[in-house]
Length: 211
Image (tube, rainbow, N blue to C red; front, side, top):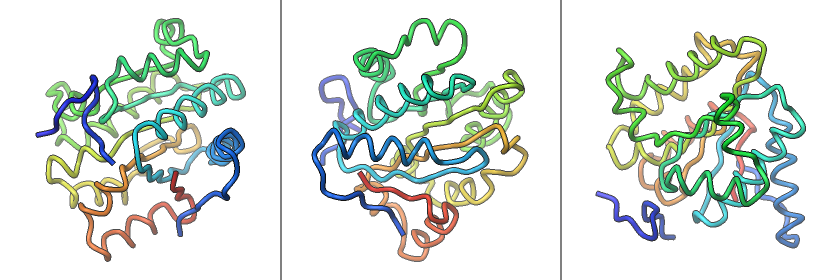
C-alpha cells in the first residue's frame, strides 16, 4: 500500500544523461529531446523524484500543445494526483480546463484506468484500448500518451508490463501516436532483473532518458 503525502502517492526519493547545466537550460534540453521523439515511437523516462518529474511534464506538455497543436495528450498519473497534474500544468500556463473541455487533454489516474471493467480486456491491456479509442476518436490528430508505469511494480505485474512494452506498437495507428513511459528509478530498479531491464531498454532502443 502506498502512503499519501501532501496529496501525492509517496515517491521518496543506453540511457541519455543530459549535461550539467543550469536548471532552466537543462529543462529546455529535456523538452527539446522529448519533442523530437517522432510519432510511431515510444520512449522511457527515468525520474528520481516527483518534483523533477513535475517540471518535466509541465514544460513538455506546454510546448507540445503550443508547437504541435494537432495533438491530443493523454496523461495517466500515478505518484501525482490528477488534481496536482492539473495544477502544475496550469501553473505553467497550460489552459487545462479549456483543453479538457474540447478533449485535447485527458488526465486520468492510471490505477483507476487499469481497474476499469468497462474495457473487456486484462487490466494492463486497458492502457492500449484507451489509446486506441482516442486514436479512433481523433483520426486527424496525434495522440501523445504520458503514462507512469511505476504502478506495475506495486501491483506485482512486471512480467505483464514487459509483454505490453514489447507489443506496444501493434494494432495502433503508429503514425499518429507516441508514448512517453515514465518510471520512478526506485521502482524500475526494484521491479526488473538485469535481463528484463536490458529487454526493456531494447524495446525503447535509443529513446531512454534519465532526469
